[in-house]
Length: 139
Length: 139
Length: 139
Image (cartoon, rainbow over all chains, first blue to last red; front, side):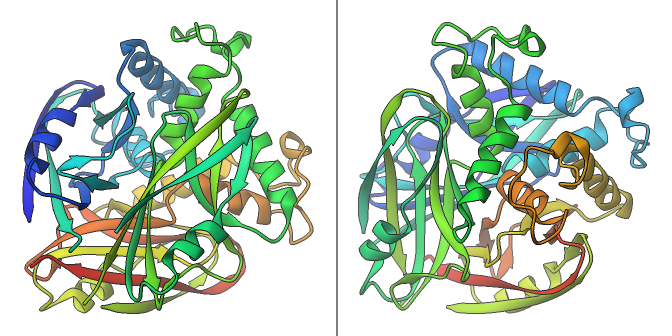
């Protein structure tokens, strides 16, 4: 079974969609769910969902590790015509996953207690991000 | 088919569990195995299993790239109340995978000659880590 | 259904194999494709395939983030006997995925418009890289 989830973003940061995913899986039994973000400037993360500071800190760390392309340290970058957040977004999408696979048990993604599923938007402008989702049942 | 593997850790570092995984897959034929570490401060890696120095070097590199939150370079971090290794563990778990999917052929994960499957513990304290595992057969 | 794709590399950099993958999937209907590079010094990426500068920039960024082991910043590394590009290759293969899972719809990997599938070779010498591939259909 396939679906596509749509996630609207309003700037760089983490957007949780655990509830949409668990809702779609309900009633599907045991198996695996596979997700792919169909863009090259966003990532998919399984991350802590208890303290929102974790999300702020994740964004802050990766913004320092991969500065905008108009930063002097990044003067070697060539792919800069879509703006200073463009090439860093591709780098972050290489470093953090664009696809996830998660075991499903009794119609629920088998996440740990503190785990949520997030889209990590790497671009500054608003976007509508599409996530391809497939469920495969074990029989 | 589902199972859960349990891996006891005694400090940060890589813990191989290739044999447990291959043992569970034995007799299962062709398909795919999917793994998820059900925690936000550990990762799953497929890495070289010949020279133990590789594991030491991996840990050393990531400890330098993501220093403890009491290091002056990390003063901007907010999520620090569980100790200086807490937020760096979440960052490492964003940068290195928490889920893996591996083709299975004739009841064996199709790893290369020098590949093993590891849990990478990012916290200093001992933990019992749970890994959700699902096998899906091709028929 | 399983296969193995073989990709010849002639130095570090990204090698696209989207067409080989889509060709093998043709006619297979709906499901999921799972890929594993069977080596510990190469990665698999889903990345932008429009502007070749993105690939040049990705390589340049990761070469700066993970310098050769004969660079003074990397003097702590132990696993150096296979050459200065050896341990950095393992580090890059921890930081960027070695396995991918991608939803398949009507015999095509459900990639976005600008997404291609790449092997990222991290070693300087030529290699023949093997990628294990499994397709699982939904029925």
